[in-house]
Image (cartoon, rainbow, N blue to C red; front, top):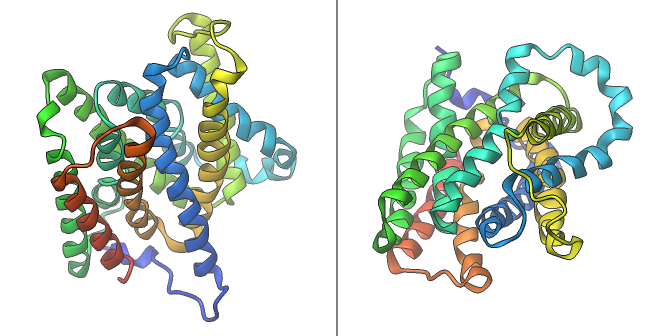
Length: 303
């Protein structure tokens, strides 16, 4: 069996080597993911339906990346159906699952139960798909990340209801879907822009078809451009363009396991931002969970 650490490239010599570029881009991606958690919670208080936000999420990257499509068609045709399917799980399925989970939970839950558990999902799916075992030296960092996630969730225990637990189930499912997407990015063998085009073009086609057939509800015509603008900036530009291309780039430089581990910083950042933006409180268990997750991420990144 192959060691899971084998996909973690060693840092390149020099300050601006490939690994350094991967870390810089991944930091920007983590910022975008924190915005993603906040914006998914904000959908419920807006006149937009989840499908409307999904259109924004996938259309803007297409507009930005479409000129690069002709030069990448031949490479995209060589991607296997299985690997393409893994990548596409990170599109409409992931978005709709998260939107359902976010509807009855909090920003802390959205961040912690998706990005926070992503390293565990990647480790589990890597074993199931490729029989890659987690090396013993990564057990402690992963355990710390899991403990931090539990702390953040415990910090919200006063608000736990049956409906919220249903949302928690959706968010945990979203974490597995995201883990499959992360592995798919590594397996396609194409560059970050190609992966972004594959995800965005196919996902936009699916969500528009769902809206036309009535499988997805739309509020088109019931909201203004001003009301949609925050989602254009956060979901379209931040998540759709910057994080889609940036995460694929980071995975190509740092590997799936390391990228997902660093991505676990997103729930900590989202929980902090939710205080001034959405008025959500920060309890002691939540703050402790943020600290433990950060420690786990730092340790995971050392191996």
